[in-house]
Length: 164
Image (tube, rainbow, N blue to C red; front, side):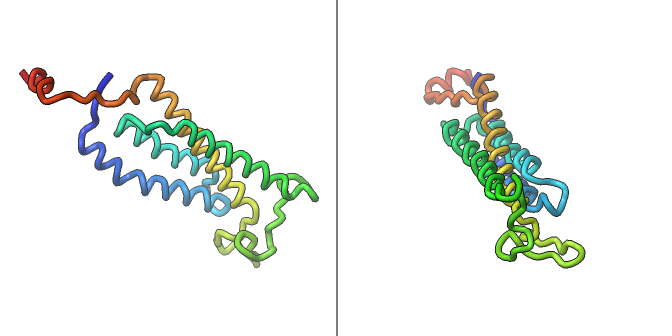
């Protein structure tokens, strides 16, 4: 199955991929303040992968890269969960300590990203893992169905024969 998407589809894809990824990162980082979080943001980031597969038909040979990124996200999640094991697993040891992810909250939550403690870091780890896992699933499914076959290069003489 050799096909090529139109220039319009590829151009719209080029414009939309970056905003989709930025919105997914926003959902991941603000998951403790708004509806969203690691899973939802990771799914949005993976939708950019789906768009690239549809528009270009290939992602190259990135299966090993996606598997590595997925493993890094999972190891990061487990590591953050085990860091608070002195009290309990998943203990929010950063909450209220100040610093980058442990800002203090007085009264109603002011909506700052650093007030979540380890929740923000857990969302980040889950977002990395989910986006890589879903991208890997999409990549494997599209490869299996034949969508990701490279475009057939035709010579000028072959293209003239096809036109006639």
